[in-house]
Amino acid sequence: AAGVIQSPRHLIKEKRETATLKCYPIPRHDTVYWYQQGPGQDPQFLISFYEKMQSDKGSIPDRFSAQQFSDYHSELNMSSLELGDSALYFCASSKNEQFFGPGTRLTVL
Amino acid sequence: KNEVEQSPQNLTAQEGEFITINCSYSVGISALHWLQQHPGGGIVSLFMLSSGKKKHGRLIATINIQEKHSSLHITASHPRDSAVYICAVGRGTDKLIFGTGTRLQVFP
Image (tube, rainbow over all chains, first blue to last red; front, top):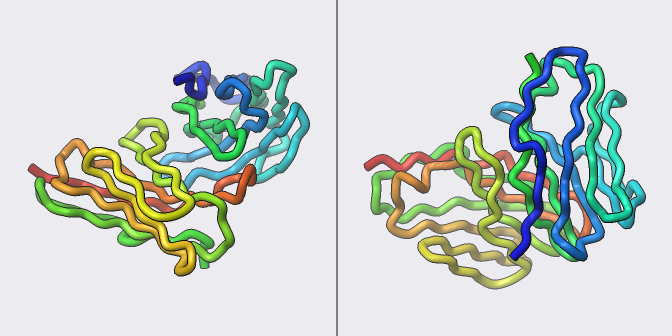
């Protein structure tokens, strides 16, 4: 069965650079969630989209933006990267319940 | 007080032991997830429960909706079971609320 796909799986950036993370939901899932998990920390909800509209917003910095496209994939754009942005970013997709992607591990040097 | 509480926070076991990890929550939910995360790894979904009990191989998950409590059991534990186990709850398409995780180490 198709799963949630994230790309890239690993990303290394310098401070103040930008990064774009992509999430491809399971086919026919209309909702995408983004979560951030810092080293040794619990996952924290960032933002979610339903039918291409933002549906909920959590602790997402103003330097980050996200959107969901017509094909339901979502992109998380991160600008002016800081060392503290180093984390595992994983997305989940949902029709009724959430299924998780493998995550993108971002390292900011 | 966290909306999702797990116990214990850390757990060590000898290979072959029966392991139980508990999760209690204080909010109304439509489903509870048990997730596994190996060091430096992504999140793997083990179970999604809304009632009763599910079994997959050596793993068993139960939930009691009235008591707002779930347990994850591992039978005949193995060193490869060493990981962080996370309980997360959700209401329909709402964002998930995560527990703080239980770090399990199984020694040979």
